[in-house]
Length: 335
Figure 1 (tube, rainbow, N blue to C red):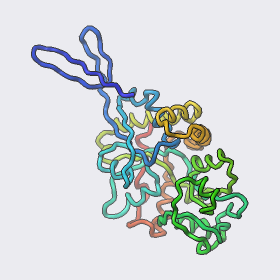
Figure 2: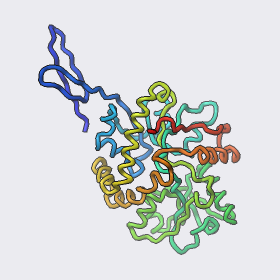
Figure 3: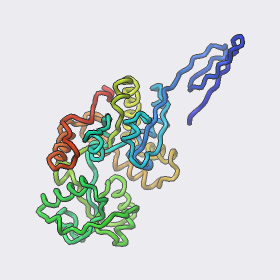
Figure 4: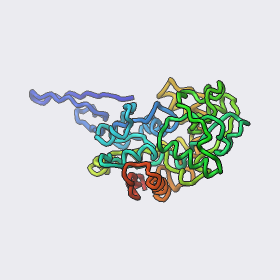
């Protein structure tokens, strides 16, 4: 995909080796388009949350914007540290996992600059007919947990709001790598999933399930997950570059919205290890979820953003309170 063109011009005794993506004229004159290097760090292995990124690469939207974008895998501590340090200019995160990075004496200088999916599509899945189609129904059953404070506080609130007793749920350490297998073998009764991937997979494998979404139980949980993040220093120093990147990325997601089948092909072409059937089905599920009811792809609603962080503050789930309107901006999205 990347091309290296080395043009050698002999002028007297000087030799210039120019490495860039551009066009060369036969008469010796050179019209070089220098591409600015951008490193983009994922949150996990490639999946349909990332489709717009791969579309923008394949379709040349980044190159048209003067950018050479490299996609890298995240370190163990996630994309936030790389982006904050300037080692990556953009990455993928989630509003809930960003909270720790935005709180405390060592808060990281990062901001969400676009919402990948407009509404939270995560919730609890279980085997159909076992009574866990509502939060209260989880009583007397086990739940595979990562023991995250925000995770457990979220689950407790939706269960209590539904009239249930959270203490009656058996919490077991999560070792789940395949949700379908875990449910089929009855090694777990219920799991937190993102429906656009794991939920779609249960449908493809004809596993009948019950599911409820957190956002449907309590609107405070209709937060942004996932989001595109960037470093505040980079945004301040190179606003035009940031805008150019997001304009190209927006075109990628808009293409995925309008052309889910072709977008799925592009994602699979770039990542041959993916299950094509799952990607195609997931892409169709997400096509109307990326933008949903927002005026345009990527926009973050301040009220919903603040409501979730205010809830974290009230529940003492962050080291220090996160002030309103912290950690996001719509200023770099295309008009």
